Image 1 (cartoon, one colour):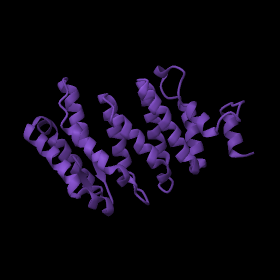
Image 2 (tube, rainbow, N blue to C red):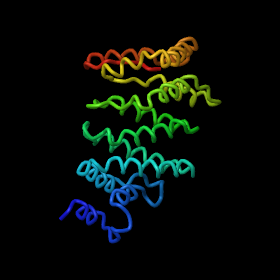
Image 3 (cartoon, rainbow, N blue to C red):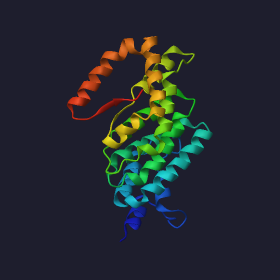
Image 4 (cartoon, helix red, strand yellow):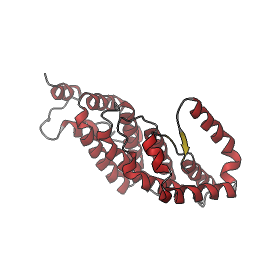
Length: 237
């Protein structure tokens, strides 16, 4: 019995010919009521399929991204969070040699939530980007959208929301972005165009003192811990 038939049997699908298997698996992780959260049992099936047929990762990511874009447009933000949770789980499950098939869709989804005017989505996107940046890849692909992310995190560092607490959280989300990077990407960090965005953002927050007063010691401790672990730490913003 083929893997597709096995998965179709597991998800109880009677209408297998109506749409590709990967689409049905993605659709099934979303509950009828968005308040119920990710359907974990179906997420496990999607993950199993993605690991078993890694060449489908590109299609899975593209379809998940398409669904999330519609939910962002319709302001169904709980569904957006479900999509990002699924994205996170797929990212963590992917093997390094197959992750490049998933990169384009992943960065597109993270970019979309970072461009949202919802602070919670911006912070969610930041956290996912940090996870992605710390994955060791055989052929790193971050550079494809690197300039956008530097610009966006720089903007977040300058956040002054009407609500001081929200503004502070966005500011810290931009500052905390840090990468464990290889030599090729380290060279990109020092690109003059990127440094023109990174340095002013750092100086802005050093001068204001608001962010650094309460968090500078914890950031330094985190940096030292990462260095002891053997990684090359770079505070981008």
